[in-house]
Structure formats: structure tokens, C-alpha cells
Length: 275
Image 1 (cartoon, one colour):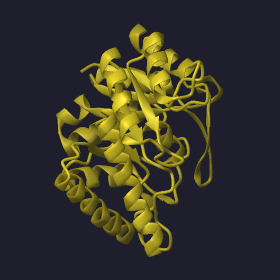
Image 2 (cartoon, one colour):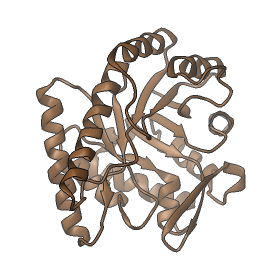
Image 3 (cartoon, one colour):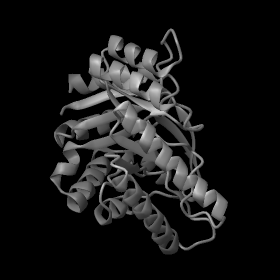
Image 4 (cartoon, rainbow, N blue to C red):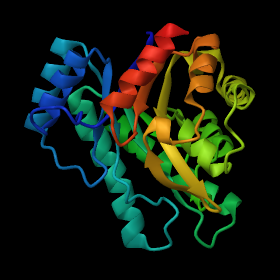
């Protein structure tokens, strides 16, 4: 596998807003992947998922999924916790029917817990989700994402530990989130290289051949992430990141989450090819 570039959702220039049309537009643009955005809820039936899979396979576009934002595996409220678990399960099942292998999600918030207790609860519930999916034959990789807000569980170390300790779990590394979470500290060739070295040390070199990456322009404040931006309007050093990804021979899927979607996805692909 090479490093594929794609959009977080249907490209803006797609003539229709449905997923199949988005996949066709991704192919027309010369991009290699697309993330299905279930961020407001899993609103796709199994028949439609099969149609999506057929289009993606015909055009050779790799699919990933982003589960709903409303997930907190550390919620103290039983109803919210059960709903969070179900949203990940639904995302995985429908995503699998679409032909997607990677299911990205934000694990949760620290709330009033210590970081250690929050991590233990998230791990416990994630382990249960993995067992359920295995029992039902849903062959996907759950991708807890590095998060941009410092109130969220999702440091690189936390995500790597979940990946090392649980089967069928691997990181979704959002480098823009790491930049925002660190309040600008992770924003150089050396800093990005250190992140990749940590991944390799924790999960082996094969993890670098199967990465799921998010990139966008971003702005941050004291608490971390504030909002996504177009790459050229942000101080996020995407040029250095692309050099590191090439030098480390990273493979997998890079999903662009900038507001202009395909414009920045194509910029990233072009600049990567020029390095």
C-alpha cells in the first residue's frame, strides 16, 4: 500500500451529496480514499451500504469511517455510556458493509476523573466493543483518535497504549490535533519525527505501513483545539509533516479535514509527490 490521500466526507465539488457520488468525485479528482462521515449519526441502511461498497470497489477508492462526535466512553451517565458504545458498534457494522476497514472515533472526556481512571474506563468499554464485533464477525480496526482538546482523552501516549493493549485497535493519528493539543509545540520536522518514532517503538514498524492519518489547518487556544482552518491560513507546518511521512516511508490513508476538503487534499498529495 502507498500513502493514499482523500477527503473527510463528500467533496465540496461533488454534484450530489450522497456517499456514492462523493466516491465517484474523489476518483475523478485523482484521490485515493474517502472517509464516510457519520459524525452526526449513523444514518445509512445496509442496502445503501452495499451500493456504496460496490461503487468504491469498482473505482478503487479506499473507504474509512468517522463515528459520531457524541461519544464518551468515560461518561458517568449510564444512558450516555450505552449510547456511546452503540454508536461505535453501529459505525463499525455499517462501515464494514460499505467495505471500510478503519473506524475512527473520539474516545471520550476526562470529566472529573483522573486521567488514569478515565483511561481504565475507556479501555474496559472498548474491550467490550471489540469482543462484540469479533463475535458478530465484523472485521474492522477501531481507531481511537488523537484529540485536539486537552479536556479529551486522546494524547498520543493514551492512544498508543490502547492500541498496544487491545486487539483490533490501532491509532488514528490527527497531527493537527497533536499540534493544537500541544499548543503549537508539535510543529516541526523533529517533533513529527518523534511522534512516528513513538508509534514505531510502541507498535512496531508495521504500524507505520498501516497508518490512518487526519490533517487540516487548525487554530488553538489555552485548552487546545478551537477550529479547523484551510491549510494556508494556519500555522500548522504541513510541509514538514509531509517530509517526515515520506522519510519514514509511511503507508496508509491520509484524510484531509480542512474546510475546503478536496482543495487541501489535492495540495497535500501534490506537495508529497514533489518531495
